[in-house]
Image (tube, rainbow, N blue to C red; front, side, top):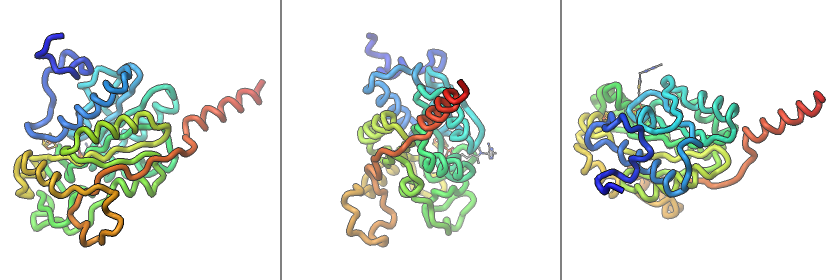
Length: 277
Ligand SMILES: Cc1ncc(C[n+]2csc(CCOP(=O)(O)OP(=O)(O)O)c2C)c(N)n1
Ligand code: SF4
Ligand SMILES: [Mg+2]
């Protein structure tokens, strides 16, 4: 093999030589974590359907990945993915989209997909902002952070997405930052293999919008910020909310087995067709 060719290049469409990401964007690290997970599991891209919404992170699979991809509407990738999974239950249905897409306009789709426990894998890129539209406050923007729509600092509390997903009924939930690419890859592998709704929250840097408005700066200081402020979930048991303020709690939040929707759907269809005979 030509050593100048990136080992994950085989998973991307040959006509695309560049991604749409700005230099230093965490989306590149998340892209590699997803493709490495597929590579390490020895899975075929033809077994996947990737579904994206609208936003910078939604460009991760579409049109780059050499697979069936759907670039859908803002806030609706989970709804499209639900239809794909029920129609094509043998496919790995994989949603990649942003925090704004999946927890603001698409928030209800997300919690109800977790409640239904449909076998979809979600990688939710949480950069704490609406990156693509110029850096507006999102439901994930930390308190006090300046954005173009909160120039005096955000007054609102952000969602804790991973905890929200556990409470909604997801079967597998993990959170890592882009400072943890190996752990993120391992969790994506588990999420793909899990029969049920699984979500990996990828806390990621947007140096262009988030970094600029909040004065956190460029990619490297943002990665250092993730490194310094991350804490493993196992160590948080006796910590107060004040001690956890500003920290990124990382690790596996849940890993369990529950009745899954597409299998139940297939069972009912079988019963109905047997009753018709
Ligand atoms: C119905 C609808 N509302 C609003 C928009 C504008 N819009 C496009 S992307 C986006 C936010 C994207 O933020 P996020 O999902 O966090 O992705 P990021 O760009 O940060 O990766 C918005 C508000 C749209 N395209 N469609
Ligand atoms: S605007 Fe931010 S999230 Fe979007 S590609 Fe650029 S750095 Fe990444
Ligand atoms: Mg975002």
